[in-house]
Length: 334
Image 1 (cartoon, one colour):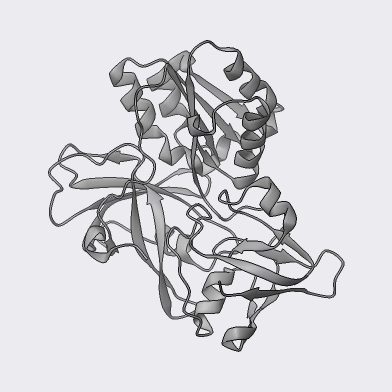
Image 2 (tube, rainbow, N blue to C red):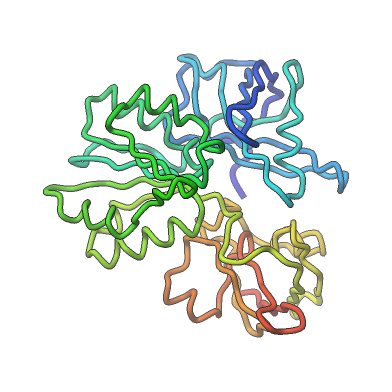
């Protein structure tokens, strides 16, 4: 788990709350004590959300879209997720004057100038991690472009802002308009460019998986491909399944709006975890039996490891029945 002192939880006041796209709310909070500097591009804050249906609380991570120079006011943007446990709904109910618990800005996805050029690839709400990076690259006079992918224009927050700030450096690809992104073409274009290009991306796992495969196929350096995930999108619709850990005597049901990690910890399992987004690998457990198919939603395991279906990131991976009467998985502690 993340170091508590580093998180610096504070009670923060909501000073702005408005819809900026369909099901997308922009929220600005004010910390009781300024940081003394602006939040870095790519940083995020953790927010404690109330899950009213369960009478419990949990923590969600949101990218910092904007920050004032003192780090006093921080703006995040939240997509209202259908069939969620209630975290995004809680955030969408926030009004000016409400207070929430939030950490200081945390940095797991820094912008590191040094490459000959940068490509920022945003999928849907993933744009929130890249708005600040685009501004920073513009200030630095860097060679960069932004590629923004969405299902429809109405849900693409900050599309107009990015167009006004970056002009021809922005390319949008919208499924509903028939202009979906050609991932192989994007990566092939990068491979054909001279010098070193770094691609930073944030969005659905499907998009990032496709980019990662194309990147490796093109022979580009893995270190030049960096990403931050929202670990809630997979190849299949979420459904309920059963998970067991025989060593701990635990068998429990994972509901469609619950993670395997949450179901196991609620059942009494003491497990290791950190990012809860399928990035760090701390929650990976060995799979000994599987009825159904694993829907790997992480970016930690390699394609070869995912194909073997003998490991699972419990924070994001799900099981689908895929012809079985019900999905079931048996895990073992390492």
